[in-house]
Length: 466
Image (cartoon, rainbow, N blue to C red; front, side):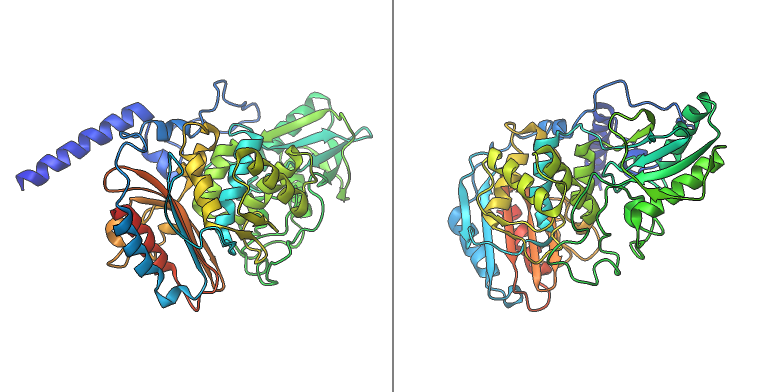
């Protein structure tokens, strides 16, 4: 009992110190605003201080990555080889474990073969987004003056998390259609305009709204929406539920915006048409998304397919390509080449990993994750901090992962991105070994008979135990 009390007291002190040094609060975890906190207003501006990226999270770890000795190769090889022989994985499996600091390969089995990555595709896309766009960049949704007096155009900025009228506050804080309407109405009233003809512009994204390799059921089942530059609540009819997705996300968003303008005292004509905003048009209102680093963390933790597709298109644009599936893939590949991490990224058909045509090697994924934990790539740190924590958060905190006897002992000690499609299970992430060495890993199987998730958890647990 005395030992337990001492441990609890020590834990309380550690949490207190952490809270004081990081600004930790319960509201930060729950995504709720504290009582009496500021409310959103038409005049609300971006924070006057620079946005702090996720970099310092890893910088404050008590042990520097690489301080501890590498795990014994013979022991790790024996245990992983035995686990990789599990028939639940099927007959096509790849695995790799890398030292995060040196890049030294500690274990490999088919590490350079190209596998269907499923949602671990998001690791490559998010790394490219951070490196190309910058972690503090925000996505803007605007309303501009039309070509004729008394006209306004809602311009989609490629932010699928734009919150509609019935959305509840969450994390990261979303740009709000309601705020956009209030700001636009305030500008119009200052110009003595009480009625407008509203149009909407979705021209930022081009090409097909569905990727090659998607199952026909993905959109009806709510796995993803058709991809457009203008959407609210990721194309969901009800923000809290994945399905159903609306048939025409841009028009649905524009209609919701028209309703909000009316509530602000601006009459809107019944006609609602798609139109291209004139170059250099005067801005009537604007709202900005959370910074890219927060969008990346959200995308990885929640495995957000819609956000991943948007990020891929923005990378395409930044890299001089079209904002399409094809242009986004070219942009992501170009960024990874600059990072020295393109080898092994053999094919990209989408950003979410829903496409069965994507091909990435285990070594490529583990290398990108190692870069995210490196002091040489501070812009990529949100990859590491966005990874789900085994047994606690995101797709590893759903009550189904790391629950078996051979993996539950490593709950909280593994951070990894999951990937799941029919006959495909993947897991790529990082862990500190028992001696404090930071290592990255990727385990991939794309001929799985039924379900190999428990085996992947066991493989990651073996890495963390060694």
